[in-house]
Length: 105
Image (cartoon, rainbow, N blue to C red; front, top):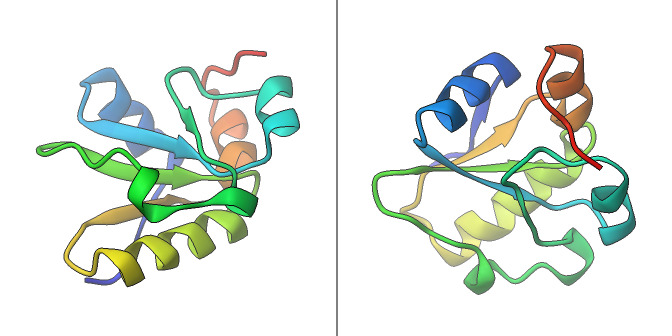
């Protein structure tokens, strides 16, 4: 299956309805500075597809700061698990903030 993209507004809706699992592939220091509530940290530098939570009936969404590392993580996941649906947050955390999404530090 190909990687999908999702915009910040749609992701916000999915999270509000508990329809998605969100994974942050930025580094720990970036995550500590600003994070989307509920996101699981899995830094790309140490990324293991087997460690990513795959929850039935929930969409798996990957995010980074701008989208590039998220796309790389999605490709790694698809290489390990070709049949999963995985989404990359378009524009990453930057787009999330621009769309008014909640951020914690």
